[in-house]
Picture (tube, helix red, strand yellow):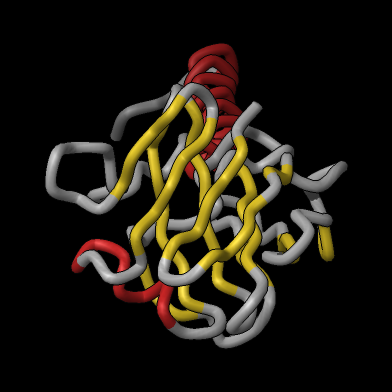
Length: 163
């Protein structure tokens, strides 16, 4: 039968406890990494997206933007070094907000396009909720809303000013 000294027992216990403390300190932050969008739309010659200075013009008749034809349809864009969501709120109203959560910088949308069930986006990292029409924070832990960019509708085009 093997005997363990008190000193050896305390050293082993402290080592195990240290590992548990380290794991407990690291694991809650494992989800804090930014979730990367699968395929945000980027400008090309045939996408229906044009850029003039800081103005982005989206043709909702283009295949890549078909979700913007209906109310609460949205698309995610990576344009002019900005990660944005463009949302059609109604037949005559649109909004554009930053996709970067103000809590820890996560991407507030993990899909490239879709239709909202309500006027809000949820950050998948920690559950912050943002109003799609204004960018206002509806529920923390995000301390403030996301940046909003002016958006207008004219015919089949949605124009966003990123200045």
